[in-house]
Amino acid sequence: MNSAVALADGREVPAGRRPTCTNCLRPQSVCYCRHLTQVPTATRVIVLQHPREREVAIGTARMASLCLPNSELHVGVDWSASAPLARVLADTTRSAALLYPGETAADVLRDPPRGPLTLVVVDGTWAQAKKIVRQNPILAGLPRYAFTPPEPSQYRIRREPSLECVSTIEALVLVLGAIEGDPQRFQALLAPFRAMIDAQIDCEARFRGARSRHARRARAGPPPLPFPKILRERAQDVVCIAGEANAWPYGSRERAANATGAANATGATGVAGYADELVHWVARRVVTGETFAMFVSPRNPLAASTAGHCGIPEAVLRSGAALAEFRTAWRAFVRDTDVLCGWGPYGNALLEGAGAFAPEGRFDLRAHARLFARGPAGSPADFAARVGAPTAASTEPGRAGERLAKVVAVADYFLHAS
Image (cartoon, rainbow, N blue to C red):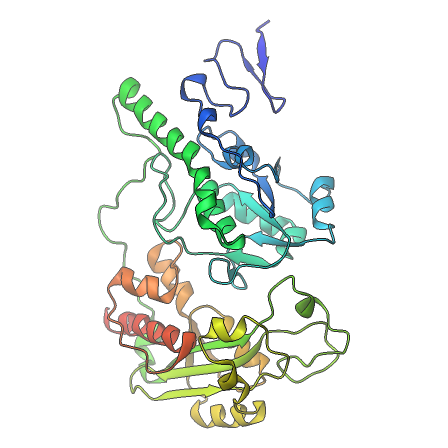
């Protein structure tokens, strides 16, 4: 009978294998433990790791858990009956959020959540992570946060699906730095990550004499260009849109509950909490350049971050048009045959939430950009720069004006690049 060595997490490996560090679980020859630094956090981090990812020797979830004392690492797929997860999510002293992209995900780097937080992170390939979130309503129901990395991943020994993907530990460095307002403090987490990469590359150079089987392979050429027919066939009807909202942060008391019964975006009362409400709306016909722009006075109390996020002075937002006036003006601009072209569904959701007219024609430019890029597309500005789409200066103020200029640039690129 073969003997075995027990590891720190309860697993056993045959005694004949290379000596393994019981802390980082890497072979002792490439152990990165001397590079680990404990980084205390106010944020509680819960990493839910897919079982197959645990077997990936060059994964970074365990590395992150060794650096973050206020973290937990759990392995599994079905979390519906997980006592540890239920315990942390039931903690009334802090809100919980899921770090996972989605149509409703807020940008954690631009608008990080405030207050004590439990951050749930899913570790695995994109397919594995998607399966975990889809099969666990307890996760799917959490407020979501996502981000676009400011630079490519340093994960040179593992192939990523696109240049916009990063490792779990790189994601935590960015996100925790934003949440806790001290990005530099979390750079220490990258020391063992870089050491692991350097050791792996050195081993493969010395013992295999070949490049890493995990390294990202450069594409032989650009991907096929799937240009949307609707933009070409109905070019005269394409109206690019962008909107900004008075949005209370997820986890805030104002968003979660309002005892007096707030009015939501449609004017209905008695709802729980303040929903996102449209306060700035801009639109432009791509072919003619005809533009619509209007501020809408907030119906709910103005969130502290709204003016700064919108890039519009608070006094300007408060002096905006009444909701009924906006509906009338917008209806006079938009045609029944128009195709509203937005970056994701949020703009259309704001428009419908305001009770304004929305034609049946819709086109999600971000979804198409993802198909084109075969992965995450980033922001409209990111994608416009990626494909070399010329962008004119914004003619409208604020974040919505800047966003509209980039959306128009991308739509125009797809319109004429076929």
